[in-house]
Image 1 (spheres, helix red, strand yellow):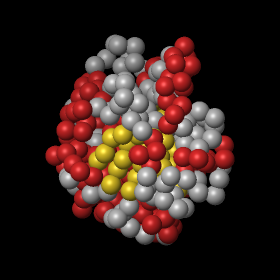
Image 2 (cartoon, one colour):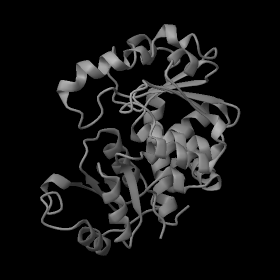
Image 3 (cartoon, rainbow, N blue to C red):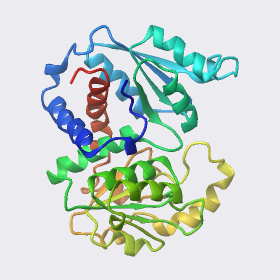
Amino acid sequence: MKHLLEIKTLDKKEIFKLLKKTKEIKRKPKKFYNKLLNKTLLMFFEAPSLRTRVSFEVAMNQLGGKAIYYDISTSPLGKGKETIGDTAKVISKYCDIAALRIYSHEDLLKFSKNSSIPIVNMMTNYEHPCQILGDLFTIQEKKKKLGNIKICYLGDSNNNVTNSLIFACSILNIKLSIGCPSQKEFNVRNDVLKEAYKLGNKDLIKVYNDPLKAVKNSDFIYTDSYMSYRIPKNQEKRRVKILKPFQVNEKLMKYANNNALFMHCLPALRGQEVTKEVIDGKNSIVFEQAENRLYVQKAILLYLLNKL
């Protein structure tokens, strides 16, 4: 049984296989119509979503299958009246594949252990593998390769996107610099770094508390929201004050390589983590990132259902 729960469980060969198939799907979408005919995807949502929900539903529809949206808050599971193990066993009897966008990574792992169908991590508090696989494909499209490049991630670095990016870069031997505040709540998790060092050359991952040092010689500048899901509104002013030195603006972009490209997993708040001039400028590829989620998720669904 194959699942996609964490980037760190994939090897280089599997990642490149998915990216190669993503390229083919994007170029020849009609070739894959009806590949998942009569297959059903059940999507569990605890965290809100725009891109993830729509892209997965469209992916299944265009592959000939059906996607069912299920709001956990309205379910026996969400109300604490059914265990996650029982839920997984039941839906395994109805569906061909399931995807979860939930906060607890431990709950995702419990679900997968009790499931007899493939499980996709659409996002947890630990990893966001579909996002990063789509990002890798976007980078590959722009540079025609994934070797000899440097990515810089700026801002709050204690989150799922940063974790998955660290693991992916370690597996693929991509240079990654991270610029973030020194406070523990914003810094890269030590356990994540330790796991990453086991996957590849630890010298390729660098963490800086100075944004200018982090962006130097970078080909891609990546950031995310200051206010991710479940952070109380009353913490916004404090977080903005601490993270503002890591804002991606035109001045900061000048310290990167010429024609460095800007990335963001969205949603974005112009004026906080990035300025309008950068995200809406000619070097921004944020909407290409969003589009490519559709194609990479088609590849993931086909891969897990043995239809590649």
